[in-house]
Every structure is written in C-alpha cells, then in structure tokens.
Length: 154
Image (cartoon, rainbow, N blue to C red; front, side):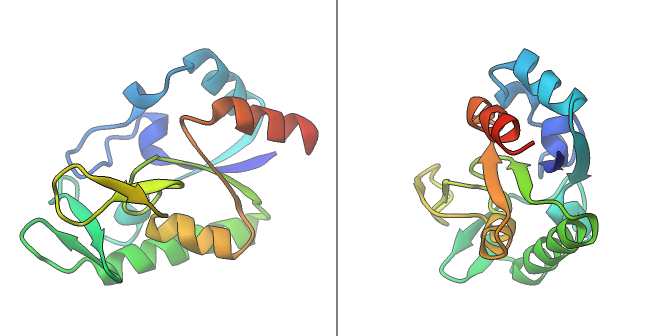
C-alpha cells in the first residue's frame, strides 16, 4: 500500500525546532514493519512550502496559522497542504500517517492558538485538506489501527 508519511516521523529534522518526532513513536517495531512492507512517500508540508528549519513555532488561530510573535504563516501552511494533496493524487495514495498535534498534520487534536500547550479537537491544515479529499488519516498513536487498515485493504 502507498502511504504518505510525515517526514519528522521518519527521522528528518524538519520540525520547527530542527528536531524529528521519532521519540513520539511508542511501538517502533510495528512502525518499522509498516514502513518496510509498504511504499512510503515522505513529506513535511511546512518545509515543502518553503518555510525554513528552524522556524518559529506556529499554531492555528481562527482561520489562520500564526507564530508566537503573530507572524502569519497561513499561506505557507495552505501551500504545504496543497503540495501534500498533489503527491497523493499523482501517486494514487489513499492513506496518510501524520504527526499528531501538528498545526499541519494533526489528525485529532491541535493546539488552540494561545501557545499555552492547550489542545482542542481539530485537524491540522494538511490533515483537513487530505480528509476532505477522502484520504484516510492516522497518526503515530494509531499504528495498530493503521496496520489493521493495511491488512484489511490489501
């Protein structure tokens, strides 16, 4: 199966802090099994849109994505989402494994825009666009569910 995967989960140091997110993966054995038995397409929507690494942390606030110093990153986040969707369409990808809580990739919860570490129900910009286009979403806390989805849809 073809799977779009957040680059930070694959060890790329593309997060705003120039770090990766591999430490957020609880079951590395299952993660490695999923990676080795499927065709993986890596993306960091923020970097794909031209944002640098490191960069100021950003959160969603109303219909925008802003940094702590109130710099508007909405254009870049929307562009990154469109690039991710284009990869899915071009390569016939119908499932994505994305970084939880990210303002781009969050699949269930995102930070509330106050920079107080408060999570709210919601989708990241990329996750929302992918979902609107029938891409099945998972995050790194749902590896068992993703593995079951792969088994049932191969």
